[in-house]
Amino acid sequence: MLQNAGGTAGHDGWVGCLTYKSIATAAPSAADLDSLVRKARARNRKLGVTGMLLYENGSFLQTLEGLPDQLEAVWTSIKQDPRHDHIEMLSEHVAPVRLFSDWDMLLQSRLDQSPGSGPKVATRSSPEAVAGYIEALVRLALNADDIGINTAIAGLAEEGWTSNAIVTLLIEPSARALGDAWLADDCSEFDLTIGLSMLQLAGHAVRYSVTADTIRTSRYSILLATAPGEPHALGTSMLADQFTDAGWRVDMAFPDSDEALANQLGAQHPDALDIGLSDALQRYHALAKLRATVERSRLVKLDQPTVISVGGRMFAEAAATAYSVGADHARMTAAGASIRMAELVRQSRARAQSAD
Ligand SMILES: Cc1cc2nc3c(=O)[nH]c(=O)nc-3n(C[C@H](O)[C@H](O)[C@H](O)COP(=O)(O)O)c2cc1C
Image (tube, rainbow, N blue to C red; front, side, top):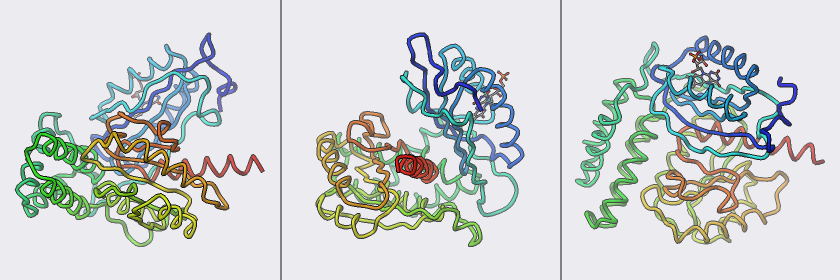
């Protein structure tokens, strides 16, 4: 463990912090991940870089913190590493204290268990090819061609795309493109809604399938809710698949008011709550309302504090942050959300215990 990680900071007391997600170019084995983490841990310790690395089903999510030069050195290596691609920066900022002081690298992995055997190639598609797939999916969605959508997505799954890659690289961007088509008057609200449900069903069909003995990996529970009055439920439904597969107890809510959501929260006492806005439309006007929804949810008396996450196009595109609505976390994508939330629930419980 780093001797002075918690207190180490720049001359003015600040450290650089970055978070990115990426897609593995080939599904790593347990030994591959172990070797990656061992080497990374050794180098990070030497450079005083802290953070965490999560891997699940073809996706990486990593947060790194450190002094600017050291952080830059590690980041330069990681960017060039052929073991992953489609690297997307989620946040980059300076912070007065480190978030990760107790460990230098945390690895939580759930190895790929896609049907079939042998290592799967996640994707090596160029950004141009991915843009072409999105265009094709949007065209199919606007023609209400559900068979076409299912065939296209099943074909990519056959080629070895993981369900996380399909969600992050295809389904979520297609939902945003559908929203743009509606804004540009290229389709009706009805077409948009039908298109979103078709994407939802196609995503559901290729979901990561697990065998019964790997199912109960978590004992946590989550209430997945659409924001009161939000009719688009694509993200919420993709989360339901994912959290169920990860072994969480999942309840869903489509409340029409903050009060209805608070009542369900009070009745169920979940460890976590996710509130989703549209994945297709930005809903700028809904921000203040969402903040009120989060505030109201926090007023519900519970034994343990509930970790609250929010999602939707505004958060995926970083047009809004968790902080702006008072949530604990904003998900940029549904992929990998169960791992991130499990970590936040653990941290929140540790904090509650140390405060007792
Ligand atoms: C997803 C991912 C995360 C990584 N994280 C780290 C890290 O935190 N620290 C590190 O030193 N190397 C990390 N690596 C390995 C680096 O990319 C690189 O292989 C290693 O630092 C050696 O760097 P060099 O080839 O520039 O000498 C990571 C690789 C991948 C694929």
